[in-house]
Each structure stands twice: as structure tokens, then as C-alpha cells.
Amino acid sequence: MKSIILLSIICLFINIAFGQQYRPVVLMHGVNSDASSMDEVVTWIQNALPGIYVVNMEIGDGKWDSIFKTMDEQVEIYSQNVLADPKLANGFNAIGFSQGTLVTRGYIEKFNNPPVHNFISWAGPQNGQFGTPYLNIKWIDELLDTTPYSEFVQKTFGVGGYWKSPYAMEQYLDDSAYLADLNNERTVKNQTYYNNINSLNAMVLSYSLNDEVIVPKESGIFGFYADDTQKTIVPLQQSQQYIEDWIGLRSLDQSGRLHFYNTTCKHGEHPTSVCYQYFESFTLPFLQN
Image 1 (tube, rainbow, N blue to C red):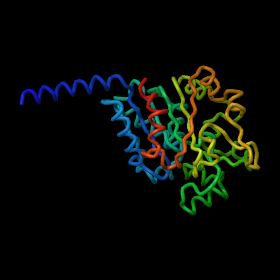
Image 2: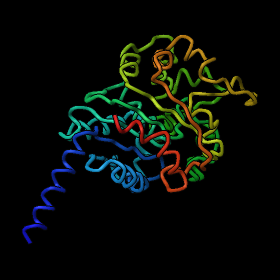
Image 3: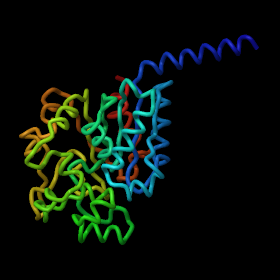
Image 4: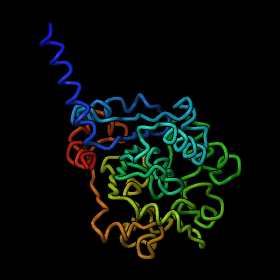
């Protein structure tokens, strides 16, 4: 009996010791889902890094608030949740999936206190979303397709905040409630956004070659349509975003802190076993430092 108790105590101390080696991790799920969609990822991380502290972030009631709260509201709640958790006080690594990548990056650019060390983005609409179906809720998809920049859409749906139409770029720059600001695409730039991105130890961006949701799929690595023909994608390194370094991506790249990879998973498969190999190769190493 004594030997069992002693073994249990030893295991406890080992777990504590291992846990102290790793920064906490905060996960942020995508649109039209809730934190339970990332449960498998929590298990991956905890199995690979014993004792690590993982927060599977939920904003409000999950699925519905991921649709009906604006992006700024979601970022604000993310920040409040982080500040309320003393285990995150010294900073953390962050993984976002789909819409969750923009919630996470919004936190980094607008708050970043406590700071994010490594930011890993899984198949997110980093440079905007254009195309339906997206939510597969017919009336919302129709609004996004026909009046995406109306005040009602921008103030009602999270997706509206990062809808980016190559047919209406001037309207996007004028009326986008979230992404045009977050990407520093307007004439007046926000230096805090640049400073906070440039403070990252690493940013890891991914997209899927078989993504059926993010349009264009290259948005995951900041690509977007060259014009309204939708035939040519401008890669990040050839964009004004990169050339003029609006949010610090060029600075990250030139200092070896910007990383890219692609997957062959379908969009919704990223937080499932189908995509585990990519987690193991391209995410796990950034959770170990």
C-alpha cells in the first residue's frame, strides 16, 4: 500500500515537473461549432506533453455565438477569458482553427496581454472569405452573398466581419467591420497591430489543398484574388500587405519566424484524427518551446 502511495506521489511530481516545461495552450474553435469540436486536439496535446495546461476556449454558448456575435465581441470575450485565468498570466501558445484563427489573431493584435508566444493558424480565412455555402444556413448564406456590407450583416454575423468580395473592394475597405481594420488595409495604419504581431516568437500558417469551405483556400496563408476574375491568386510575398509590411508579416518572415505548410484534409477534418499527422509535424514542435 505504501509503495502504491509513494508511486502516486512520484508520478504527481513528474507530471508537475513536465507541465512546468511547457507554456499553456489556448485553442479556439471555428464557426458553427463549439469547443467540443476541439476535444480531440486537447487529447493530442496532453498525450504528447504530459502535465501541460490546455484551455479549450468557449465563447458564450459556442455554436450560436460563433455565428451571431461580431468578431470584435468574440475577441473581447476571448481576452476576458484569458485575463481571468491565472494559469495564463505569463503568456501562452495559441492555436486557432477556421474562424478561430481570426479571433485569436484579433486578440494578439488588439490586446496580447498576457502575450501569445507562438500562434498557429489552421485553415483560417486570414485574408478574407468569399463564397458560399459557408454556414450552410440558407438565409444567412443568402445575406452574405447579396448584401455582405450592409450595416445589419456587419453588426449581426461574425462571418460578415471578414467577408471580402473581389467585386467590391472599395466597399469592403469602407464598410468591413473587422478584417480591413485587422489587416491594416486602410490608409491609416495601427502601429499597435504591427508591434504585437512582430512580438511573436513564431506564426505558423496553413491551408488545405482540398478545402471546400475557405474561399479562396489560399487565404489561409494570406493569399487572395488578384482581381474580380477570381482566376489568379496573389501570394502573400507579392502582396502590398507584405511589401509594405502592414502588420509585420514581412518582418516575421525575414527573421525566420513565419512558417507555412499545407494539408490534404478537408476543412472540417483538421481537428480530427484524419489530420493528426500534420499536427504532429507542424504544430507540436511549436508547443514544445
